[in-house]
Structure formats: structure tokens, C-alpha cells
Image (tube, rainbow, N blue to C red; front, side, top):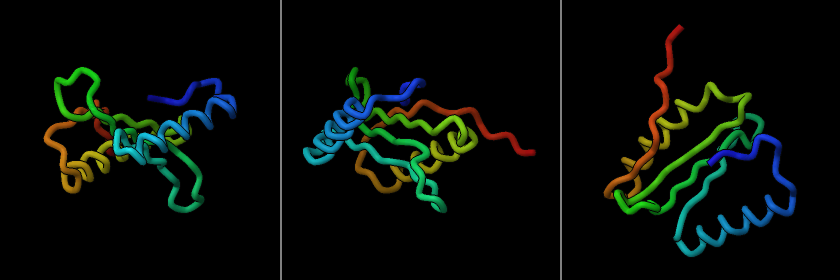
Length: 103
């Protein structure tokens, strides 16, 4: 899931936030905002939901803003480590990212 490239009307964004909050409250799915640790700006999002095709237990997806694209792979690595260490998931699918190239 990624935000619409042309933005989202406030009403649609509010409805989306309410749906995610309801899912979280009822433990049907979990959505986390990714914040810049210095500025507190929203720079992305992580979604953890039951698998739609039931081939595995959980689907995980995430996005980062285009101006923070360099953080996509590190976010993926951090979320994968977090889910593996701290979540009681039997299996999850989280599409791999290209490996970071060292300078």
C-alpha cells in the first residue's frame, strides 16, 4: 500500500485513519506511522494484516515518502527484525527490497 501520488482528500484520509484505528482496536490488523526521529514528520507507514490468500499467516507492507526513498530498505530490515523477534507470527510475507549499495 502506498499513498496516492496525487494526494488524498481530507475526508478520504480521515475515513482511512478511522478504518485502521478500528482494525487496530479489534486486533484485525495493525498500521504504524513511521516518523522522522528528529523532526517528528510522517515519513512512511507499515501495515500488518492477515493474509488475503491464506497461503501464509500475515501480509506486511510499507512505504516511505519519495524524498526518503533511501530509508525504504533500512525500514524493511528493521521491521523484519522486529516482527521476527517480538511478534507471535508463524509466517509472514513482506516483499524484499533491493539491497543497499555501499559507497
